[in-house]
Image 1 (tube, helix red, strand yellow):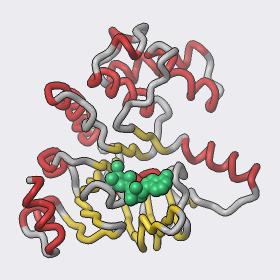
Image 2 (spheres, helix red, strand yellow):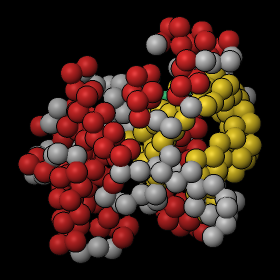
Image 3 (tube, helix red, strand yellow):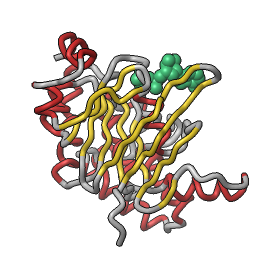
Image 4 (spheres, protein in one colour):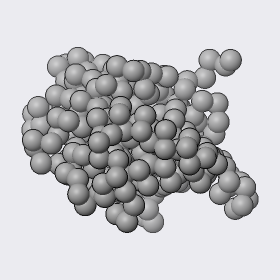
Length: 251
Ligand code: ADP
Ligand code: MG
């Protein structure tokens, strides 16, 4: 085994046309670590998360996961195959759930394992049941997304990501579209994953949650990681004025 970090982002830069959205980002995450990314709207948090699984490929720089370079330069067909492979290791949960509306909860969860892992119906059903149990949603297995609350949809979305047995889970403001009374049930599921030492990168605007759950906090502003450290340091003793200003408004 090498000593390379579990996840490593090296000199990452990303532009949309003339707009530079990520500027020389470096980040390492160890296995089992939970990292929060905070920062104002438009600072590049989603773009960074989406770069990790090639939804928004970097303009330059490298992304590594468990010894494999995610953003490899390959001929198109090989690239497609590579990306489909590596994405199986990266679970992602979005603000707006992104469940397939025409499929039941079961259908949503079994689709990818069936197609990408070639598992049998029996295997994927067991997998769906196991993951739904984990998020407390087993009794809704035959419901459609439209029959669920926002919090329930998000728990299903988490179960769907977990069903691929990912090496890392990425959360992009998983609770910000929820009514306040539904936030806690989703936070509880994420806390449970934290206790199970799932490696997670969590973009959040919930400073309390970040303080409670995360090992490390990154503050981003205008495409830069301005400050990073333990929650104690970043939240209680930030060194950068931009971090202080942001926290004044959000703590
Ligand atoms: P955050 O998640 O921190 O709010 P984003 O990563 O979504 O920030 O966006 C960072 C910047 O990149 C913003 O200025 C946003 O408008 C821009 N941006 C994001 N996605 C695209 C895109 N697909 N095309 C053009 N600009 C984009
Ligand atoms: Mg965002």
